[in-house]
Every structure is written in C-alpha cells, then in structure tokens.
Length: 379
Image (cartoon, rainbow, N blue to C red; front, side, top):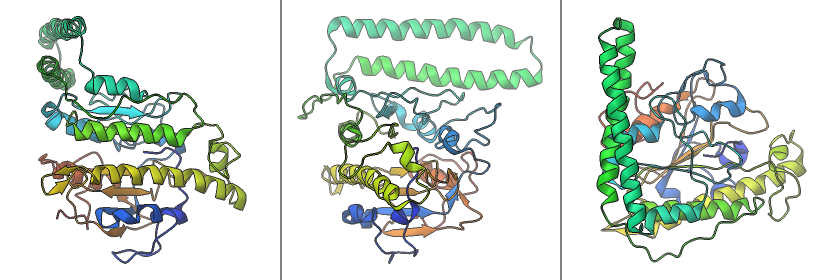
C-alpha cells in the first residue's frame, strides 16, 4: 500500500473489460496482464480526510478522521486468526521508511501493529538460527506472557460476576481477544522449538540513504518473497511511504510530497510520474519473483493473492474515492479491468470479503462489505 495515491490517467485504462488499453504504468506490468485485475470505482464508505484515511485502508472502519475514531480489525489480522497458526509467523507487518508509523495492520481491539523496517533484522528472524541462550530467553518470555495472561484472565472472570449485561458483553469481547492471544502464544512456543528454514539468499544489507526509496522498497519486496517462498508466513502487509525528500531518480529534482500537490503543472506531473513509475516497477519485480518460484505445476504467484493500492485516488486532490486498486494472483480469473460506479462507489471491503473466502475462511461479512466483489471469480 502506498499512502500518496497515483496519477489516475497513468494507472487506470479508459475502457473496462479484458481488452483494456495499456497505460503508462501498466506497461511495466504487461508481462503479468493475465494474472492481475484492475479495480476502479471502489472505496470505503464514510472515509474522508486525505492521509488520515490510511489507518482504515485494510479495516474499512468508518470516520477515520473523527476525534473519537476507533479502528477495527484489519484484513490481514482477520485472516491470521484463521490461518496464522500454520506458519512460524502468523503474519508479518513490514514498512520501508521508519519516519512514519505505517498504519496498516490492526488488531481486533483496534491497536496498530508496528512494522519491521529493517530487511537485515527480518532476514535474521526468518532464517538465522537462535543460539541456545536466545532460544531459552524467548521461551521464558513466551511463558512469562502466558503466566501474566492467566493472572489477568482470572481477575477478569472474578469481575464478570459483578457486571451488568452491557459490561459483560464488552468483557466477552475481551475474552475472545484473550483466547486468540493464548493460541498465538502456544503456537509461538511450538515454533520456537523447531528449526528455522534454510535459504540460499544472502543476508541483505540495509540501505541507510532514505533518498534511495526505490532500492529500499525493492529490498523489502525481496524479503517478503523469501518469507512466502519459505512458508515462514502466509500473510504480509507492506507499507510504502515515500518521505518528504528528493529521491535519487533520473529527472526528479523536487521532494515527493511537494510533487503530489502538483496543481496539474506539467513539469511536476512528469517528476511525480517518474516516482510512481518506480513504485510500479518494484511491484512488477515482486510479481516476477513470485512467478519464478515453482510449486508443483503452479507458481507462487498462482497461490498468492497480491493486493496493491492506496488510501487516496491522487495526492493532488486528497480524494478518498475511486481508489487505485490492483489484485494479482491467488487463483482468480484475471486479465480484466473491473470498473464500478465512479459516483456511487462499490465498497472496497467487497474485495476483502472475496479474498477471505478465497483463503477458505467461512464469512459473509467484513466491515462495510455488502457481498463479494462482482466480476471477480475463482479460476
């Protein structure tokens, strides 16, 4: 997810269906045309406020710019509750630039999950074997958390007898969260006693220069691919947020955020297009990497849903409707541009519900969804 939108004319084709024309950005994804679907005319209902809306991009929670806003569970965490136990890491929350929080992954209680920004640290978590001392330390930490959870849970059960119906309902929500945490702690202990997978990839070297945003993002994309390839996790969020710096890209000589407020000036538009184009090239490289990994008679891309999009249509307008959304892989019938009503948008959560069901999760509702996404069918 990128938090600055995309120049719409460079991303969206003017025609819908399978015969859509190639735009400037889509030219870099031509190799994967039959493995992706472009989706226009979607957004989250009651979401406005420019950049503020990024916090609800994966949750669909309403009124994110309100002072009393309370977030809800994000798409990845909803999936992790059902399939996270199958892998060492139930999910991975990743980011590129640590000068920004990266508001993507959110617990059921509405708590933001901090992302990992260092590719080298992530590599060590995935593939570097713990020393006996480190392993024992982690096991002690897990068991201490379990003991603390047991203590708090016991106190809550005693309190339950003194509460009214409304407060008991809230406490039930708490107990649901506790049970989920208990399961995660048990799985964490089980996985801590297993060997980590091996990889032929060398440990990456972090890039400190924040003006090399394209290379920094590409490095984290590579780590995401390795995590999926090794089946260390099946759920990853990656927050892409170009900082207010002048990126080291040919033809770019102004700061990114300033360029998003281009006012339709041709020179600024061209510089911004080069920056956004670099991001699309990274996405294309990630899809190519997934396609290169064979899994039986399929590829890792065939078996992986890749969602790419933004919380804004474009940085210039700060509009939070008609979001640029792309879905690749995952066993759907692709090769199309799905165009929904540009004035009365289809809920983006309809897509999220389709993705959850594709994971085998029996659900008929996610946040503001009104059903699954029309036109997006499994192969």
